[in-house]
Amino acid sequence: MQAAQERLADMRVVLVCALLSLLSLSHACPKECNCNSNTKVVDCRGRGLYDIPRRLHPDTQELYLQDNRIRGLGSMAFREIPLVRVLDLSNNSITSVSPTALLGLRTLQRLSLASNSLRELDKRLLGPIRSLSHLDLSHNSLWGLPGAIGDSLRNLSHLGLAHNRLTRLDRSLLEALTHLDSLTLRSNPWRCDCQLIGLKLWLETYLFKGGVVDEVLCSQPEEMKDKDLQKVPYQLFHSCMATSYHYLFANIHHLENERLLRGHTHGNHAHPSSHAIHVPMAMGEGFGGGGGGGGGLPECEPKQRHRPVNLRHAIATVIITGVVCGIVFLMMLAAAVYGCAYAAIMAKYQRELKKNEELAAAQGADHAKADEKESLENAIA
Image (cartoon, rainbow, N blue to C red; front, side, top):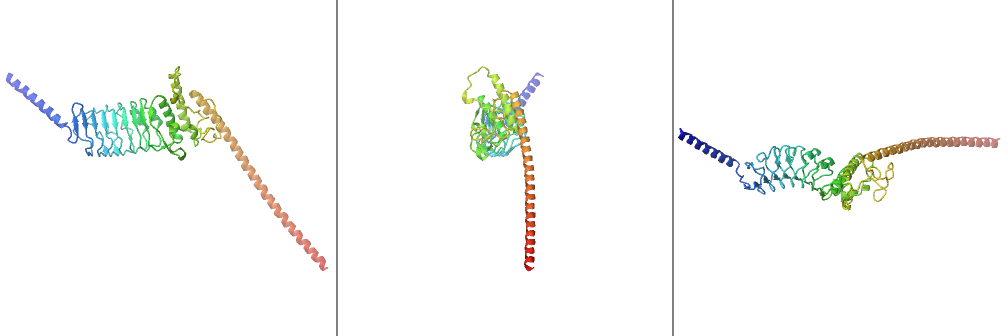
């Protein structure tokens, strides 16, 4: 009996070893890659791959797939490596990414999709990932980013958006990135109009807090071309009325942020001058001040006043300016009505005058004919 139990135990050990051997073989290193079992790094760079390699070890923590020919990422493309922390897919030919391509990668920290052909990203792509700290989307063809994607990027410290086709960027997305340390935005065709004022105000607060950003060079409109948005004075936004909704709400939000910052730094008198925030007045300085480069003030804009120090003053300034603009509009409307009425009366007077002149001329001609006839009759007699 004892011998039978020992043989059974030996068979169990052999069976377990066989299973472990099969398991290790099923997750062997793909032949296209180099694997390091100690560092748990899989290097598949420059191997001409058209798809994600299979049979990756589930303990893989770093996967490098740059410089290949991968064209798309399907659903749960990395389900075999749920513990991966670094994923580099740069310099491929990726044009499409499934919204569930990264599903299951809850520990992902660094993701690079740079130098591909992406035109858009689905807002669900990064939904399950909360640990992402580095995201590089530079050198693509992105027209924009969905604002809802910001909820998945709250722990992001670096965001690369250089060399894309961005013309504007949603401020709500940027404000969700509370841990952002560096941001690259260069080489995008930024349209520096009223809708970009939110980005300008956000950049000022971001730089004041110590953030790092490269440059935002305007491409449109023509008068703004090649100007750095950070250095463009507010007066140059002359095409925007001070009552623009984009400007008003962006400025009010900015003023509230400044008030919170002042409360946080109360008593600290050593603000660096290089990071000082230029806060335009809600209506007075905004778009088109009298000094240099912006043309005259809009017709319904009041003179400059002291800068509002909190949200209540900003709202009051907006309301007062709205009332003034309304009064000016009514006066202009009354002047237009009066001008039209005066023009109509003068036109009628001119028509009657011309008619009277023609009638008088006709009567004069009749009298002349009668006199000529009478003189002729007298001569005959």
